[in-house]
Image 1 (spheres, rainbow, N blue to C red):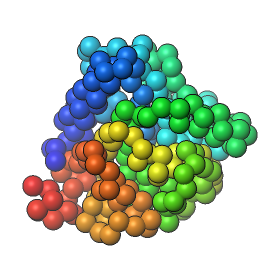
Image 2 (tube, helix red, strand yellow; image 1 turned 90 degrees about the vertical axis):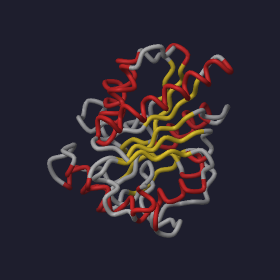
Image 3 (cartoon, rainbow, N blue to C red; image 1 turned 60 degrees about the horizontal axis):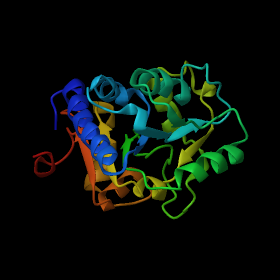
Image 4 (tube, rainbow, N blue to C red; image 1 turned 30 degrees about the horizontal axis):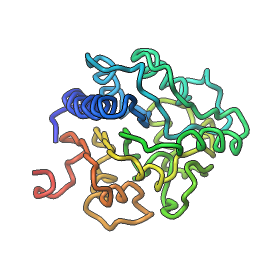
Length: 244
């Protein structure tokens, strides 16, 4: 647990850098999955400012994208990743989900590249409704497809308005392309970054409740190499035993 988002982001970035460096040292390349959203700002800032990372040998995939949203829209996750990770780091090998294209064609194209080799490390967050990527409750824990089209629930869409990406609920797309739960779990290592008080209920449900599709990120507890980074606000509702 960390006192603030900045210290949390720096610590998570340090672990991420180690994972990337180790993968490159072992096999010459590192394959990563990157999350988006306001909760990832400090982490990505620290990650892209970290010295000694051979970004030329990093291949990046991303978790999700709205269906039908222009890359010029402030809420576009392609725009977000280009501005906050790809360009600052100098990543040359990346695979973005084109929300303006035919969803099934996009899924097929990126999914084929994603599944040719294991992902070394995935960076993820947890939504206010407990979602993992855009797998809202009840999440599909069974599909083996790498990506699926999902319908966003009202809580998820309200979160996007609350974070300032859209000015009203009716502007938030109702569908998105999302990496599936099982695909995320195939990553060798998962680093989960979850700051802010608004995530506290979801954190408690996912890490003290049952492992359930109704708390999608609870499935992270089944992964043998997942680290969850919380700050004092996001961990506020957890029992003292878990926080300690």
